[in-house]
Image (cartoon, rainbow, N blue to C red):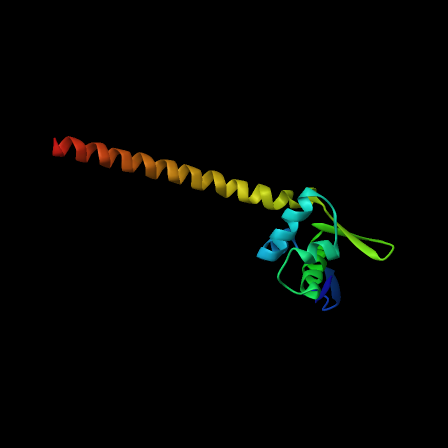
Length: 124
């Protein structure tokens, strides 16, 4: 977690990173993909990347701060598991824009089809 100051009281308050910050980085998205298949140890995750183990550890920490991943200590190993329900806000937000872009693409396709058919009639 990181700290920021409350604008009204100028007192430190605990702030949580959000899911959008978590999925902003391509390495974190790859980690989420890996963990969506099964929980893994930190070492097993690190083996899948060409970046340092401390860098992977930082990404895991960041995902944990976002609430996307939980980390559980079992003996000497740290097991990471995804919390898919915490990805729902991002999914819902993206879904709204997906529908808008689908409508725009369909409208553009209709426009292109009209132009194409008009050109065919003109050239005949």
